Image (tube, rainbow, N blue to C red; front, side, top):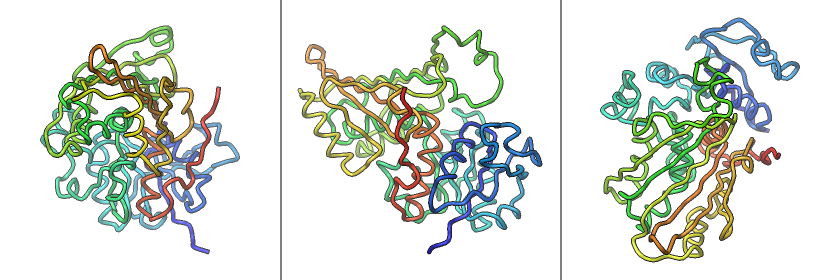
Length: 349
């Protein structure tokens, strides 16, 4: 029997990190050997997350490259932006595999810096990183040492748009994305905006035309469009729920299409990719239908009056938008079935 690979999670006290713990505890080929936090090293992880009592009782390690090398084969970086840019090269140089959830390796320096307002990662390491949108670039992930996990909004948006852009069925410069997310996407940090009395019974747009996932989405769509640059209008919103992203996307069709044709195109494009589910004609997904799972559900409407295609895409932002996709990339990296350890039925209701 093949021995399990050893996994370390940096940023274990954030939502993405603790979701990685939930997934990897039941992964048949992975053993969690180190949970890491720079701020609470030495404390049992269950102190901050009581739901892990009698499940995972390990004390948190500090950030120590030598200790990581001793205890792990692969390291997940579930850290805020700006941390992985310096940390990932040290881990790669120590001979370990890295999956970065933070965004530091998604964009080249000249794009990253103005959108993230942090110093960019060393560009020789950026060039080594593979962008792990599993359903589109999964073959590139296999056997690689440094994977950049896509952003949550970017995952929901690009999975909804890639087939239509790749086949030239929509005008790539007519795309408008109206995206809505639960507040867990902001992480566990304390902030006035996320205070219960501020967010409850509230609904707001933020970072209009300035969200850092905008260039990430445009980069992916430009790759699949055949090299022609793609620009989008992207407006994110916060809604008073914990988990979930719903993206409603609008684009002008390049020629008349029926909904049956669009559904056929998407089913062919995602054939064999078990985590993308295409809805029947007239059926549209809701966030609760993917909660707790690694699924992305997509539905469509063709407006013959305006000549536009409307695409509705939903994911669980903490799963398919972060930890679930990171484990999917681990599976691809290691040559395992990409669904291994991710066969979660959505939690409903």
